[in-house]
Each structure stands twice: as structure tokens, then as C-alpha cells.
Length: 495
Ligand SMILES: CC(C)(COP(=O)([O-])OP(=O)([O-])OC[C@H]1O[C@@H](n2cnc3c(N)ncnc32)[C@H](O)[C@@H]1OP(=O)([O-])[O-])[C@@H](O)C(=O)NCCC(=O)NCCSC(=O)C[C@@](C)(O)CC(=O)[O-]
Image (cartoon, rainbow, N blue to C red):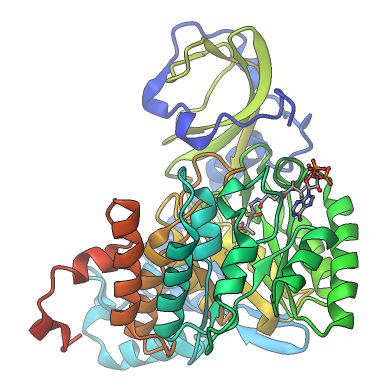
């Protein structure tokens, strides 16, 4: 990774409150379209929509209407019929609907039970009755631990997860130990779980070398992992997207000969720590390639956890936006990302206060908001146009706490496989600052609350989470685990 490409890391990103605007200059130059990183979204484009009268008027109009969810207007995402390879699918319950849920205290709709039933039916129509959870904690979770977790602890964690009823537990990775020393014991882990029954235990393989080592160690299922971002592909697996696809074709062919199922990942499906926004069409391209080479399932990874479910057309932008920009850190310019909140726009020449021990100045190309909110639904629509929805899984990291709403909208789109990580463990060593995956306990709690079956015993799951959290010496990353740890056994039987 060159110094120019090196991401600042989300943990080091300056936020709005830390931006010191005292030395601003050439602000107009900054507002020009900056496409020199090949990014589709510059902030002028983003602004067009949020400041255009017609968009704003549309938004205000539907916001005034109590029954706006029934209108198409600017909000035609709700009740939109999408076709995914022969399967007509009705999308319900978008942002527009949720503004008018019957329980909303200010809605005239609240008291109308008949309407409530209709809304409930619409809300649940896309949601599957059963969801398969792919537990990624022992791999995606533990690959990011500072201290290497002993093999025996990994093995005990896998056993506990399997005994909770999870049908897929990703066990480890056959990657270079120089790149990910945390999983250098992959062979020993596989040896120790050889006799574990009742679940599939796939492993990650980045190339033929890893595939062969995995098979020799007894793996019966593998996963390959491509990226929708060139920069992330480079930093994660040291090759371009196309090179990685060529490697993976070789793995898929070798696996086919041995009848070993291959799962495919696409990472950075919403945003990349270096490039910012990733267009849904890029993700769809990589997902289709993985599908065409024979992957039985494609998992869409929001590696840095920036996605939100959906944005109504014309809805004003709110919340933090990620900007990609050229910054000067000390003496050297480099491309990086930073976060800014609210409506303030960064301008050139501002000095940015950060924790870094050097001066950070925004140079004369602010490349604009590069991760816009409301991107999960458009992403799913693009991918579902080229890969059957039955073959899709979602994989959300919880950096902004958006995983559960993103999962909910994915379920409404017909997706029935969700990746998650016990106790919310994880992150990615090559996506600095990205937090762990959504916690499995939280996903199971939500799914059971929705009446969706998972075959997972939440109490056994909680014990698995407690086991690893105790070992790591920190509280669980699962809100459900924390809340339920306070519930007495008597009360527990009622949940
Ligand atoms: C892909 C490579 C190997 C290229 O790494 P490289 O350095 O370009 O590879 P190389 O072919 O030049 O080989 C360098 C050395 O690695 C060895 N090597 C080569 N391959 C292997 C292998 N399979 N297993 C063990 N060793 C291997 C190879 O033998 C050689 O050893 P040396 O001669 O120097 O002693 C490296 O970049 C790598 O291992 N990357 C993996 C990084 C990783 O695991 N990242 C985290 C994955 S998480 C993710 O991608 C996102 C996901 C899936 O979770 C979804 C989401 O959250 O969005």
C-alpha cells in the first residue's frame, strides 16, 4: 500500500467538531467536481438533490401526508416491484413507510386497527420464515484481536457456537500468517474440530495455496473473498480485483473437482476506507463473477459499516458524511477519508485538528461526500438483478450501529442468510477503525422478535458470547447479551 493510498483509519478521522476553519482559502475551487480518484459521487452531485427545490418540495409533501406511504411520488421505492431473476419481489417498509407506522404517536393512523393490520401484512410480506445465520466470530472476529487467541480457546468457542444450534460457523482462514498472524494456527484449529458435528465449518482461502492447505487440514467448505474496491483489494490481498477473480476461478475449479462448496464474499459493498463510495454496479459486477464461477452463496460485506437502509428521494441529507479528499499530513499529500457531520461543507485550506502528531490540511481538491447514506437498498437491487436473491447473504459491520436496520431491510428484500459475529467481535485488519460485525445475539433477538426461526438457542449463544468475552477480558459487544445478563433466571424463562 503506498503512502498516498494509506487510509487515515476511521479512528483517526477528524470530525466536524474538530475542524478548525481559521485558515481557509480558495473555497470555490474546492467545490468543483473532483473526479480524479474515479469516484462517482462528488458533493456537488449530492447537493443537487438536497438543495433542489423540486426534490425538497417532494420530500416536504410526503412528510406532511399521513398516508404518504400509499403514494408513489418521489417515494416510489415503497411497494416497488423488482424482478430478481424470474422472481418477482415486492419491496415493503422503506423509510417512507416507517415514518407512518401505526404506533407513531402523532399519526392519525395510530388508532386505526384495520390499517394497522394492512401495514403489518405489508411489513412482513418479504420477511422469510427462517433465516440462516452464518457465524463468523472465530474467523472475522478473532482475526482482528491484538493478542493471538490460543487454539484451545478458538476450538472451545467453535464447539459452543455449534452447540447453540448455529448451522454454519466460519472456523478460520488459510491466509498468509505474515498477513494475519492471529489465524496462523488454522491447521491446528481444523484438526481439533474434525469431530465436531451438526454444523458446517467453512474456512477462508485467498488462493490455491490456501485452498490446498485447507483441504489437507480437513476443510469441507471454503470461502473466497473479493472486493468491490480496487484499493481495498490491493491492501487486503495484494492484487487487483481482476487478478483476484482469476485466482478465485482457479480455486473454484479445484473445489468443483473435489465437490467442495465455495462461498463468495464481496467486501466494501457500500464504502471503502480509501476510495469512499462504491457504486452498486461495481458490487453487482463482482458478485456476478463469483456467482458465475460457481459460488453457491455470495455474501455482501459492508466492511466499514457505513451503510444505512434507504433514502427517500429529495430527503435532506443529515448525519455524518464521509468525505474523500487530498490531505496534507505533515509534509506529504495523501488521499484519505474523513467524516463531517451536519450540513457543514469542508473547504480547501482548512487545517484539520486530529490526534496525529502532524499538521493536517485539506488540499485543493475536496472530492466530496463519498459515502452517502441510504445505500443498502440500491445496492441490493443492483445485485439482485444479476444474482438470485436466494443466493445472497448480508454481512454488516456495526461501526455506525446500522446493522440491524440494514438487516431488516435486507430481509424485506427477501434475503434469508445473515452473517454475524458472537459478541460483536471483529473488524478487518485492513480496514482500520471499522468495528466488529453485528453481534449474533442481537440478530437472533431481533429475528425471534419478528417471529423468524433461526434454530438457535439464544441462552446457549449467550453462554458462548460470555465465554469469549471473559477470555478477552472485555464486555460483550452485544447489547442483547448485556441486557439479558441482568435478567434473573425466573424472568429469563418468560423471554
Ligand atoms: C493473499 C495473500 C496470501 C497474498 O500475499 P502476497 O504477499 O502477495 O503473496 P505471495 O504469493 O507473494 O506470497 C508471500 C508469502 O506468503 C505465502 N502464502 C501465500 N499464500 C498463502 C496462503 N494462502 N497461506 C499461507 N501462506 C501463503 C507464500 O508462500 C509466501 O511465503 P514466503 O515465500 O514469503 O515464505 C495475502 O495478502 C493474504 O494472506 N491476505 C489475507 C488478508 C486477510 O485475511 N484479510 C482479512 C480478510 S477479511 C475480508 O476480506 C473481508 C470479509 C471477508 O470479512 C468481508 C467483509 O467484512 O466485508
